[in-house]
Amino acid sequence: MTENSDQRVAFVTGASRGIGRAISERLAADGRHVVLASRSEAPLNDLKATIEANGGSASVCVVDVGDGESLAGAVETVAKERGRFDILVNNAGITRDNLILRMDDEAFDEVIRVNLRSAFVACRAAARPMMKGKFGRVVNIASTSGLVGNAGQANYAASKAGLVGLTRTLARELGSKGVTANVVAPGFIETDMTKDLPEAVLEGAKATISVKRLGRAEDIAAAVSYVTSDDAGFLTGQVITVDGGMTMA
Ligand code: NAI
Image (cartoon, rainbow, N blue to C red):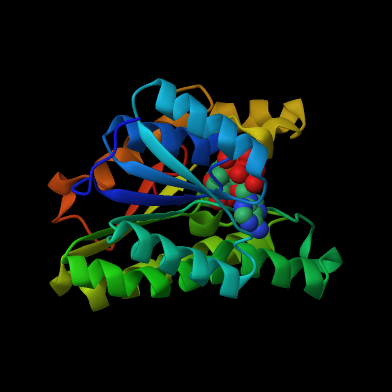
């Protein structure tokens, strides 16, 4: 395991699988110490071992991002223990799909809490240590659903559109402190979140994707890698849509 105090520290939520796992592996390969945050410990320990076997550095943080107090506490603890907090990737997300006529308040609130409120809480907790370090890279993982809407996803699309407003506000508030904030908005990506979609839906999606394939988690990780790099200091308040040319919004 390679660790040193000059190493930038990245905190990735929803790191246990899918896009979050790919982002974590990529940031570790970029030389970051990656704090792997998610709800269940076993897959995070497994990922930590994989990262370390590849010469990277990682630690595990078991947290439910829907619990604001625990999430803020986790961010503060990392900043205190490691003496820095450079990169925040709010990736954890859920869907509770239904047509709006059938969507109850609970399904709406839960998705907003896990997808949007968590990002607000983590950004607020990370802002101070980032400003102190005169460097910060915030990436909020939204979705093309939040940009162009998607039938059955009023709650999810609202949460993801909300991330855009949150991110742009953060970019305006913290830009002068060396902190950037951007959204990466994936299109259809092959993960557990999409694996149960009916074949017809996936084929229909593929027909609208210019590059004629579904995305891979690594496609998103590559974008996050650049946005969180030291080179990306002039890129802020942007929505980077990684969807194979599906929306071009
Ligand atoms: P996934 O369902 O495979 O993984 C989600 C991750 O978030 C898991 O690690 C899960 O444990 C974690 N998570 C969920 N609720 C949590 C909570 N309360 N506390 C802590 N961790 C929690 O999802 P996937 O596909 O990897 O998606 C990652 C992000 O990308 C999500 O924000 C999703 O909305 C977004 N996205 C995914 C797309 C896709 O096609 N897969 C398309 C557009 C956006």
